[in-house]
Amino acid sequence: MEGEPAEDPTLFPAKIGERLRIAREAQGLDIAEIASRTRIPQRHLEAIEKGNYTGLPSVTYAMGFAKAYARAVGVDEVAIAREVRAELGDYERPAVAPEYPLEDPSRVPSRGLAWAGVIVAILVLAGVGLWFGTNLFRGGAPASEGLVQVQDNAAAAAVPGNEAEPAVAATPAEQEHVTLVALDTVWLRITGDDGKRLFEKEMAPGERYEVPIDVQHPIARTGRPDNIQVTINGSNVPPLGTGVETVNIDVGAAALRSRGQPGTASSPAPGNASAAP
Image (cartoon, rainbow, N blue to C red):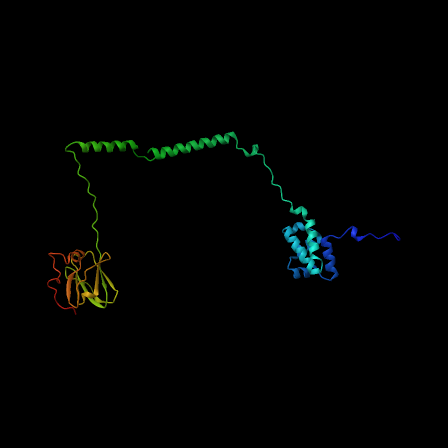
């Protein structure tokens, strides 16, 4: 009515979102342009204008988004942040954890279920004891029978004239591998005890030849025995010669180990004195 004083707008101040919307519209900006300037999703800006902070990730995000909105439209961002914190005071209260009574009947198993668990545990323990303590489930003789048998054997061995011969474990003979390694370019021929040629070529430095272990007396023929390194199971043994000389030598493991010992000949094998090609 005329003559009555108008309502003081300070008595009912606009909310934060409304103030930001008014400032935006006063500058002729739409909400999409504010979202582009602040890089804030448009739905979050719309939630701030409506005062619906429950749709924002957290109180911290709400304050940050509101301050960025205020900067974009020229409103005091510090005052906006303070007012947002005041409006969101209820959101910062820690949630109270629900309390559960210690003697809640719904959380305690029934007496019948408890007795069933005890019986199952006893049966399991009894089955384990029978399985590991006896041969009842494995079809074998009881452990006591085996013990009596051992005692009977010991008693029989104590009677004179009944001594049992000790069993001798058969151990396979250790196989010795002979390897010939070329230290320099060298010609080498290997023949068996029957004269059959097993190997013949000019070996390059570092080339290796494994002497067959099933040949009784393999004979090595070469004109440069000093250029051949001989190993048995990876261990070096004396060379076949010391200089430029044609040799025919048994390179079996036994013959190589006996070379140089008293009563053994270290000269080339007889009947093979012809020169290497």
